Length: 88
Image (tube, rainbow, N blue to C red; front, side, top):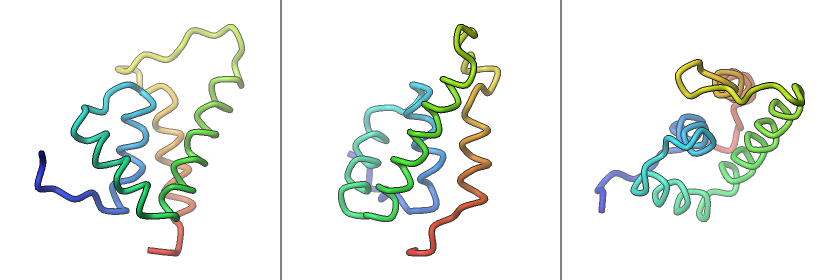
């Protein structure tokens, strides 16, 4: 187990990695533990996941973005940087 405890500032990167399938198991456990104890980040993660779904639905029939092309993840990171929650 990692001795690293996830910080709120790491939320966007971790959620984006989870949504693109790039989050390893240890990091996923840290993310889940953080989301259980931080309601602000849990709400932000839910909003990012909803935005992810909206971005995917915006182009029906389009090929799914590859991990190397950046896909939807940059849009999520941009959205997150514009709407940092003030509870932290």
